Length: 239
Ligand code: SF4
Image 1 (cartoon, rainbow, N blue to C red):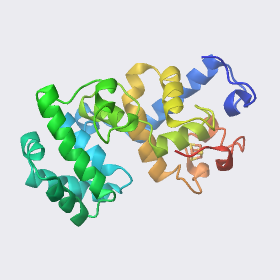
Image 2 (cartoon, rainbow, N blue to C red):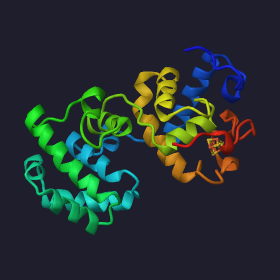
Image 3 (cartoon, rainbow, N blue to C red):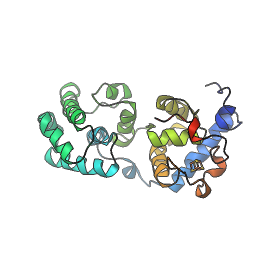
């Protein structure tokens, strides 16, 4: 990948190699700050549960997602149960548990279950290409399933990863989440990919918040162009 022009190598004057070194320092520091000791602390559940949870989670708070996922799997414990469920019943359950976009999500959940059962013999596809063909599954959800369902090296780019990567100058400020993913995959060694999303999500909730990030108390401040006023939120394109 060529160096970006006109953005001060997107906010720090540094070569691509220097940016890669800084990216590794950032990820290792984030891993120290928000440790996951074992793979079981990284995985959310089996791939099917992770996929359905991801559909439910879109534009919802974690607490709502947890509550609704638990209620859904209590009523429909297996993929067969969900594939044979009435769409209206699943929609009703989601609505009663406070899930936004419950109409679409209810439809997607039943359709996904039927497709996985009929086309893939009940096994969730384990490729990005296969996953994004399922209804309601975009690139972010597909990467979440790969990382947190299968334990594969992948970098889901959600709103936290998008914002923090840009503040840290690991991606140019105006690019799409897909491009952010591409930059991160080129800057960060593959064996660290699986830690990036969860650590940045934790960091985004605790310190690097969307509004008024606590830069003064952030252990990354010496590595961060935002903390040095080299970039502002106004320059950053949101997801
Ligand atoms: S220094 Fe500020 S902007 Fe940079 S990562 Fe930390 S909290 Fe976020």
